[in-house]
Image 1 (tube, rainbow, N blue to C red):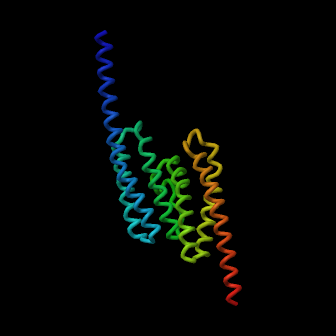
Image 2: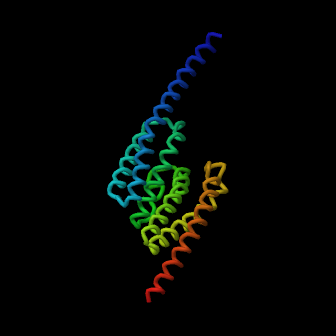
Image 3: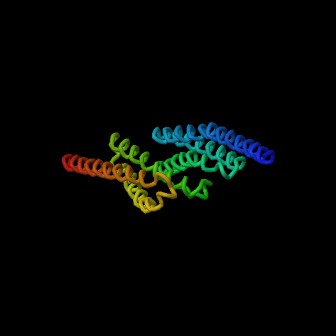
Length: 199
């Protein structure tokens, strides 16, 4: 039994080390999530310079953690990667640029898909912000991108067992897209009517 005891003691130390690393990782990646959330807020305020600086900070922190963690702990990086994808993608859309690829962002495929699914909610908010200030044409353009992104992501419902939460997020996004479609249609009709009345 002595050998079994020694083996269990060794395993206990290894698991303790993994547990501490996991807790440290979760604690430290909160900073990444905070930076990404602030970047999205900056985008809505049209402060893209500040947003870009914060996403760059988040990217550097992610790169640092990827180098130093055990591969078995990578799954705990997924939530922060997901937030980073959402913030980076939304910033690109606000700037009129293409959404960066997973390779350019340095993230896992799962993080990329989930981040884009979350980005649809921010695109919706941007559409409503544009409607509110009377920029119906800009709102329509953002909605078209939102709708296109949703349609590209829709097939990933099939991979729900691999990309967890994909189906649920798609169900939520379907409602968001349809509600936004109604709002943008009403706004375009209203704008057209006003233009006709002014003639």
